[in-house]
Image (cartoon, rainbow, N blue to C red; front, side, top):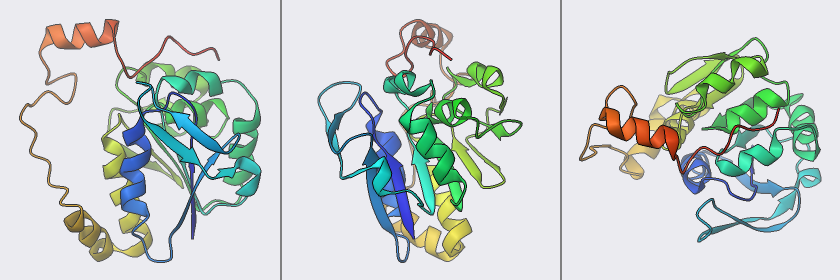
Length: 215
């Protein structure tokens, strides 16, 4: 089972690493990190690099596609090699997935037309213009399309997918092995829970969401 995780410059690292740490533990999993070219890509902060070990052409028929988000998503909102690869891979994939603003890339490629999808809460309002129906759920499954909300929800998405693929027991074992038992020190992980001034400041100066992408 080949799992292709898309890499591009200025992505959010946890969008990639969270799903990777879950999905790579599935039986018979083969993970390949793909990009327009091989080599390192930099996260949005500029201090961490992930390495694409294959080009898009090297992984034409993955079983699972994972598209992360991050400010670099803006560069992949117009038709080009990434969209072409996504549409081709989607024809034979068992699951096509995204984390955070990766759903905007999927939608811009035409893969979420008429489907329910989620994204980072700061980007949800961009989905309708791309043909998708936004929902604020943390993980959304519509057919074979699985979208996750912002950043950390990629772990939840991957565990949900692991359960669908290998059964609840395997997914629970992966969760236990990772000791994924969130107990955050603050209850501020959603806009309806966080203090209003913090929500307003993040809307104005978010490190996660770039300027409005060009459709």
